[in-house]
Length: 378
Ligand SMILES: [Fe+2]
Ligand SMILES: [Fe+2]
Image (tube, rainbow, N blue to C red; front, side):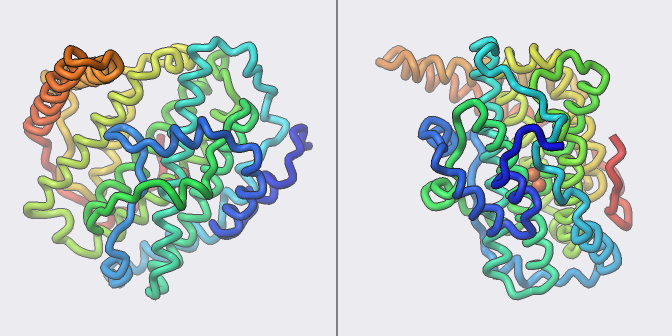
């Protein structure tokens, strides 16, 4: 039974390619609001960005060193275990947007817009790689990942549409600024964002399994299967990195540490800007961050030779200072004038210092396994 009939959305959930999914998305775009699209267009250190890269270098990858693992993963993705998952069913309870506490509503919409932008950022990058490439292994993978991310972004947009807002994804594709990253930075950043995405979704899902009274929106019920898509995407990037040992050794270990620190710190600061959202979920954001960092670290041992020492005495207090500096930067900018600007600059320096302090915490080293393949276990 489908109590929330939306034939276009349902067709989109079954779309086999990202292009088909996006075309259907555009059919729905007439309702899309300027507000949500403006938020999604923002490019700050903390908002999700769109990326572009050296597609020819990516296309030149030879996956033969990891062939057996590669073929198994592609077969799993081609079997399409989540086909049809991303549509509203009878489990999609009616959402009382009008009755939602205004502070929570604002933060939750912000969460949905930012998640939708992040999902769509993956879709755009993967789709472009598929379009430009000629390497069959690489284009097959990126086509499958673009298919998944188009579904994810579209499903979040369906949820937003019920609140009267939605992101115009076609407009974003054309108008949002693209940041260039060298392929190896794409590997580190994208691998981590897929694995941390998995850890975030599964941590919320398991928490709400134990505390269903905190499930204030039905979308959280979809997170379990959803996060398995992200898990597989992360596996694919682990295998791509495994094809070239240089990517995870020597000076590149410093880059890996940089990306781990940046991804973790960004998540901490962004989540701590949404206190009402976390309170409604019944989740302490400090606990949640630690939980997600622990899971992501354990997973990343499959390919990275280091993990961050998140138990170090300086880790948590420095993240907290970084968060407070970010709040002060925003307050200074909003206040304006010389006083506001000075406050903002002083806190930018403080934030930079905090980041350097986090980066300086000695990392933990370990041996990386022969085969990186993992199964979702949380
Ligand atoms: Fe996704
Ligand atoms: Fe993903």
